[in-house]
Amino acid sequence: MSGKCLSRLIQSSAVLLMACSAFGTGPAEPPPDTDTTVRALIEKSNDVDANVRRAAANDAAKLGAPAVPSLIEAYNSPNEHARVCVARALSIIGPDAKEAIVVLALGLRDDEGWVVRYSLEGLGKMGPESIPILEGAREFQRKEQDFLDLFPKELEDALASARSLKTAETLDELIASLGTDELTGNRDDTSVPATTRDASLEANTTLESGENPYAVRTSTLIAALKDTREGVRIDAAKALRSRAPQAKETVSALIESLSDESPEVQRIVCGALAAFGPDSYVAVPNLVALLNQSGEAFKQKPESWEEDRARARKLEVGAAAAEALEKIGPGAKDAVPVLMTLLADEYANPEEAEVYQPQLYAAKTLGGIGPEAASALPALVHLLDTGDDEVQRQVADTLGR
Image (tube, rainbow, N blue to C red; front, side):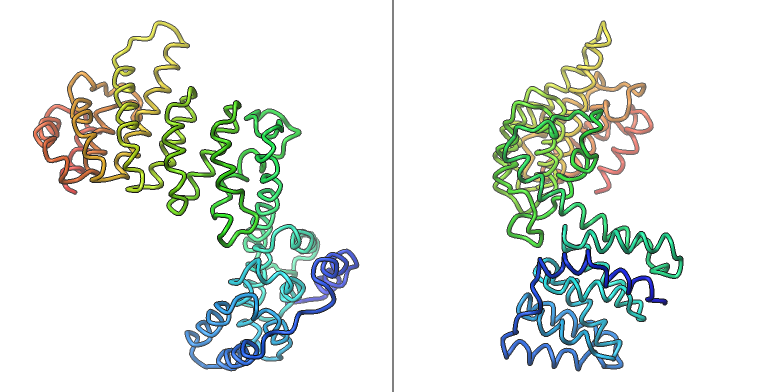
């Protein structure tokens, strides 16, 4: 692989100024014991067994930030296996290895493909600081086909990852202020970057104490659930859903939002509770209430487009509530009576969209609850003869669990 154009990229003043301002002129001195350990692991990277080499890199990564200076020094090795070990370890360490960002940039010109691949992965985890490097790499790749031509997807993935971290960092301030139009849900506003509205919150899959130091604070998102703007509440619920099952403290806040005036917020909150699974058992009474409302809406005969839309949204919420109960499992046994009610013939209408059929999602939910729903067996068996094809297939699946 030719490194000529990448060499120009790494040596460009913009990249070097960015690196020097962020990380100083050189790596810090590692603790003596850590340095010795890293050197021993680098020696293992010469083993003929690929599993041993991979384990050496993983063990070096477990040492965390203290190992980074030694890994930076080890990258100068002429041995390609040693450089692969270094690049893999740095990519696993992630944001705590930011002082090695220049090393990872140099890794993009390495003749060993695995060094390039791991360097891309590592740069993708570094956030805003790595964006100029990755954007420059993509620009050179477009102009000269021999540059990184084997890793186009990895390059795009790394750039997307770095950008999502940058968006999340900015979004922390946006949500904290709760006073910006960028979270109002106005998808037609071209002044708002699409990543801010559609991707940034859902990209925050880790807690502030986890691997992503840019993650929006969970407490901030919980506060956003009470914002006056529907768009803010929707995005906050999406972000909290992505943090399951770690952020269990959010369940009580999500339960409160089940009474939100917006059916869309209710639906997404149900999805968030589903993501928390059995930990959402305390929400069962609230979810059952939504099921009851959905059942009543199903029997309505709308006389206008507005009424039909309102009915449809309640049915969507009911389907989401049923899914949450299914994911809760045996802990949702108190929902069995209302689910049995929804199996009745009056809730059958094969002409409805699938999501709007209470019989269908009630049967599926009972399967998730399991043996605790044994009292529903007669009603389920009845549907094997009377239900439409979709319902019969779902009932058969439920009985087969």
